[in-house]
Image: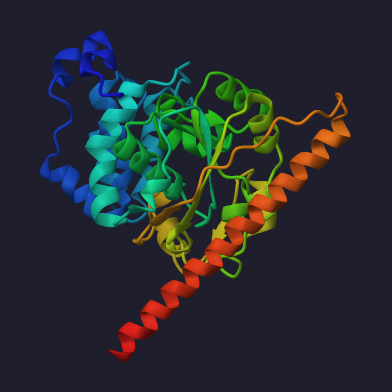
Length: 356
């Protein structure tokens, strides 16, 4: 559905170099195997399809791979740019590049590293505007979201756009880590009401975490407990009659195991969360691992489609909010019960395997 030719996603000056798509070299396979190299792979793929004069270069990539080398690479790049930040480009969503990134970079990660799978696919509806809602966990780069978006695109040919926290667009760390406009070009929609509303109006298939950042922030101890749901997706679903497709993810809690949120420092640094875990010493030595996650088996259970009826509230905002709150609580309870059921089934299967 979205299989556009490469010329639709390329800048003219990159067309010849990119006409055959991105071909993995031995170095790319090494980066895929070596966690500090994932950031290199993301940036190299971008540079294959886009001009990026302010981006990382080969010397800096090499330093990523050494303990503490990222800090030297950052200093070198800052000096190379004349002691300024990378320029922020005004980019728009590019379905062609989203498809290329999915097939050329995400495919091996999703298949071999996360061993991701869709289950109960009979509940997948025909292509239509909808809000796909999913429990969110892991306290790391949103791999549970990225993986589900890729799987739905692969299975149904859908163009899926995730609602992403504003830090993924604007935070200084992200601006240095990833290419300018990277999240936007790959389909990210800013987690702000006006952008959410506009995306629904345009008939987007939108991937949404109703827990918001409370999901990954809840940490390891509450990893299977759904946090309070926001109301905006219910209100927009009712307003534009966009159905809701609930999805349960198991395995995302293991993307960053044993993590707790360091709240005070997180707020000071204006981060969405700041995990404390046994892995943090490694992250300090290799900051490029900020987009990496631990190996896990991601399983997505597709639930029946939810259609909310348009109710008359006589323009009474309090009634509208009360109705949205009721629907959000009902959906949260349904999803929480399903999580408990899947966990019980998983534990029973594990016990049976041990007995046999």
